[in-house]
Image (cartoon, rainbow, N blue to C red; front, side, top):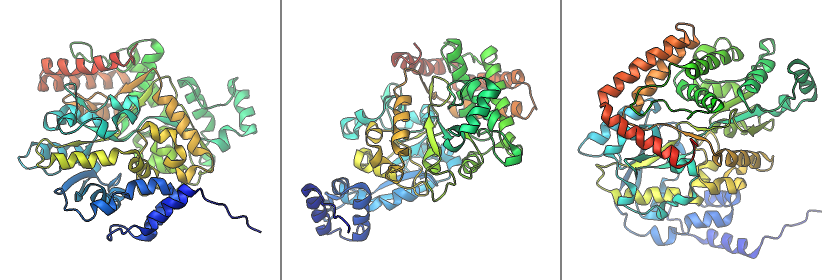
Length: 498
């Protein structure tokens, strides 16, 4: 005999309203009720409540949104009708390759006619994009963007000359995703303690990170101790070593330049950070270690070949999805090693200064930032969206943000660790000064040379320093000093460098 579960009256009311909504063809009734079952009737109703009033209205002018292909375009195109329903504004999505994000967007911003009204970008490009972006508070208010709900570190990004020119739509930070079938196995724990003299656990510092990686590296079993990127996104992983080591030494971690924009790389900390980074490649598949791409690194973790990944937050999101991951149900999250929360990349959206529809663009961004919509985009499957959480409400209600992983307890685990990381008194914000793309390109060119043995750590750092100096002179030292000082003061004001 099956016992029927009686729904609360409020839920019955919301379901009745949803079932009676005339969607004007904007979305199928089956999809509407599917979302109700997945995200809850109240959340779905809050999204579609404006359909009756907005669907019959004239549009407020088309808004063109540019997004890098592969990350968000599929899911946001799915939601395009909802933008129209809620705002009365037609939205057209255009995509560009991830690798061309910088060049295509900067070119489009400099043109007389906007290619995009709204577009996504990495916050570390703000130094170059800033002069061509519209300060958001010139068009609307931060309250309309639900800005206070954004986690504190993410609020400090996308600032140009002390004006907010973008708002996050993807909250990347480093987090450790580890295999519970390995780390919590009694035999493995006993063997580890016998070899290293302390208990096996997710690493809190570099020594533990290295030791656990060495312990689980078993090429004969096709198992490796860790995975890090050693190709295009190598910058983020080297910076992580640099800032964690700087924090260990009690200095202003990650301060790449001094007050006169002289690079601070060729020193004991820089050389040790690069040696550590190169050392870790011994604990990855040999055929990939010297040029590990980000997408391949993620996939070999999903395939069950890696014990742990100190990686962006999309790693646990994908690893928890049984459709694409062989280790789903066998993972947990922990703080990344070291005591600094590192927030590399992520994505923001801003309004082009040459847009002819800034009001419509702001309305579209504001709608995207409301919790009901934002949570649903993060909650979609890994195949549909790579969005990572960036709002406090997403972590406060993990079962809504990660409905597919709520029953296993993974959603609560991921949320609690993320909140701890975001509340840390130490965080590293990417620099976002003019020429950042060139500074990062130097890191991405010369770090792999040290990893592959083509240069010593000192030689690689000296080459970076020379190119950093060239970039600074190209953009103008006085100008760079002013922009870097703004960044320095932001770090100091937030207490991250105290």
